[in-house]
Every structure is written in C-alpha cells, then in structure tokens.
Image 1 (tube, rainbow over the protein chains, first blue to last red):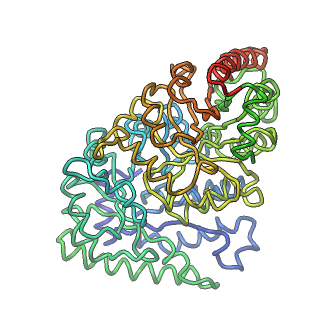
Image 2 (image 1 turned 60 degrees about the vertical axis):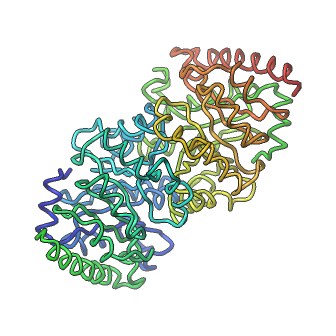
Image 3 (image 1 turned 180 degrees about the vertical axis):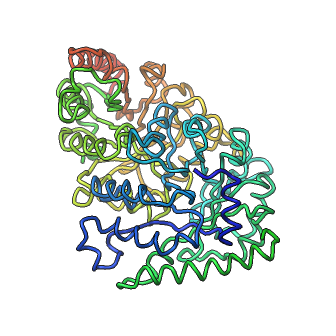
Length: 277
Length: 277
C-alpha cells in the first residue's frame, strides 16, 4: 500500500512512471496458455515477472475478469495475490453508488477477509457525488482515483459541458479536492487530452494523475509530460494492450518486456528533462 | 427479456409496478439461513417465492455479491438462474467505461455463455458518455437504465450543476434520448427528488423510470406517482431493505410478502387513480 512518498521514491528508483494495465482478454492471450488450469492468471503472472522492475503500478481492469463470471473472478483473485508488494496495485473498476452500496464495493476490492482481495487503489466514477466516494477513503492508506477527464471520444458528451467558467471535469476536480488531499486521491486524465492537462493542473497542481490512453488509444507521452508533469512527476501513465499483447506468440512476455522497456526509457528521459531525477 | 409492452401488460395484470431490490447483505439475513451451503441464494430464493406475484421486477445489487468475492458471485449466478422469466431482471451495477471495456461488462451481465448470467437490464453511469453505453444496446432486447437523478444526498454535488437553463441531470437525459428510444432505455430517478420528476418528465414523457428510494431511504410513493406517473404507468419503483429485511427471524419471507403486499396495494390505488388500470 504505497504512500505518496513511497510512490515518488519508486519513480526515482525505477526511473519510470509506468502502469501496466492487465486488460487480460482470454480471447487475445497466446493460444499455448489455454492448456493451463487458469490461462489468464498464468498470462498475468508471466507479464508481471517480465515487467516488475520497469513499472511502478499494475492495473487489472475488472471488466475483463467479470466477463468470465466465477472463473474470471478466480483469475483476478489469484492475480491480486501475485502482484508485487511494492507496486501500486490499482483495480480499474469505475464504481460509483450510494454510501451503503459503496461500502460493499469497498469490501469487494479493499477487504481481503471478505473478498480475497485488497488492492491499494480503485478507480471511482464521480456522478453520484461525495457519499459514493468516501466509503473507499475509510480504509487507511488506500487511494481513490476519481474519473476526471477520460480518454475516450465520448468524454465530450458530458465532461466538457460548461459550468460557469469551467468545464464539468474541472468542477469534479475542484469539489473532490475538498474530500481528500493529494495523499489519498488521484484523478484519471486521458493521455488523448493534450493541452487539457493545463486546466487540470490549474486545479490539482500536486496530485498524481492516472493517465490511460497512450499506446493503442493513440495519446502522446511527450505531450502528457509537457503539460502534466510536476516536480514530483505527478503522473502514472498506463499502457495496456500495447504491452501485454505486444506478441501473440510464445514470446509474449519478452515482447511485453521490450515494449515496457521502450516506454520506461522514454519516461527516464522525460524525468531527467523535468529535473525529477 | 420483457419488452416495453410486456412490462406494461405485467403492470396491468399484477396491479403493481414494484421492483424488489435484492441487496442481500449476508450480515443482515436471518441467522438460521447460515446453515445452508449458500445462505444468500437461499434467502433470495425464498424472497422471490414470497413476492413474485406482487412485483414486476427484481434488482440484485451487484456490490452486495462482489463484496464476498468468488462465493458472492456464485450466489449471484444462482440467484439469476432462479429469477422468474416474466419479471424484468435488473442487475444494479452502475458500470460506465470505455467502449472496449463496456463490451466486457456487457458480457459479464448479458452473455450467459461467457459469465453464467443474462440479466434483462443493467444500470449504467453516464459520465463517460455515448461509447460507455452502447455496448449494452448491442444485445437485442436488453435494457439500459441510465443514472439520471439519484436518490442520495450527494446527488446535489454534480447532478444539479447548472448547464445553461438546465441541470446536468437534464442534459444527461436529453443527450441519452438520442442514443436509444423508450423501448430500450430507462432512467434512474430517486424517489427522494419529489417535484424534480416534473423536470424529468419534460424531457422523457414516455420513458420508464426506475425509482429507488422509497422505504429505508424515505421517499414518498404518493409524491412519485403524482409527479412521475404517465399513461402507461412509466414507473418501476424499487424497495430493497424495507421488504427483504422486514423481519430478521424465520418468518422473513412472510414478513417480506406482507410488506410487498402493502406496497402493491398502494400501487394499485395509484394505478386506478391515474386511469392506467
């Protein structure tokens, strides 16, 4: 359960702010893994072994496990058990519900005694407001990563609606800043949003931002760093498909490592350029 | 998978627009059920048997199952298998994610071959826009129930933000109306919102609204009907805790039936008053 300081220390040590997204679609993993009792777990295990020195976070995407029902959830539990202790282990679940229901989602992802899993952080949707978020903050040291500005095309439907002088995503960040500090809360900001990082940093200069959207979704790491990096780095940039499905053959783990290494090297240059390391 | 017409027919036949919410917290179910191999499933089975002629829908709340990990998901799968074919079986999951991820959530809740479950409808969060919603609409005949105005206190944080002459929740409904018609989409509107139903009906005169918040949350059925009912009824009103936890003893199913019957009788009067039956 890395604290803010531990996350920063890890970034400096590994010269990386990479998060590897475990969107481990059973229909896309290499065919030879299907011989294993739990192919998705075996896939994740080898991906983790191949990348753990190059990344500071892992982010299983809950949907890819839930899609397979009970078997999928078993893969997720085993994957959580295998994740390194030093990395920030994020469940990308985008939950958001009434307080009494959010308490249950918090148990699902933060309470090992209840569900078999205890991730360090969860992504949460803001639409239902404060009481849909605080359930997760009751767990000491755990992180909430609230959706700010998402990487998808349809983010424009609502997130860019004008509220006075701001957009809705700015209002979300302004209000959420009053719920917890930068030691417990992060924001999701899509890498495809370029200069919008300037608006985000106006409201959240010190927060860590979880940034999906480089790789398969086409966002630019250089642009994210130009507009989004702060003195502590302040960025955790996720890549999923471009790393984990870099090869569909028996060399998938080596190929994943090569792709992760390439991103880490670009990140190292950005960290040097910004004076973080 | 009831169509709009089949839902209306069922309302007229049962003289009810009640949805029984299966927020089946294992810590609140009667103690004697803990002797069963799957106590939560046994609880749900008896609740369904006691209420199926009085309600037109069931709504398991995913969080209460996910909180117990693999065992909880097994209870949910067995519960789905037991739900009546004629009722609208809603999974209250409030998902919302990128298109490729929403495709996976759709598999989780709509594709029996993949997950073991195929609910008729799912609740969805709007923040990420169109591409987070359409995945579910690809399944012929299935329903999306989009969050409009939720029943919780914190709904004011964002849902009442002013966008021009409207509130955000109105913008959500106006835009979502362009994504699907009233034969595939419903909106969640909390029973605690009273006269706001007038604003909702301005934008969605014909849609069915899923209305949580009577019972434990304190909303008034009479007020919901006054402001929200249309010529086809247009309301599916949910009660969870007040029904399923009406008694904590061995008579829980009879007590649940008595509570459901009391609500059904009030609903029958409202349907008569509005000329629906």
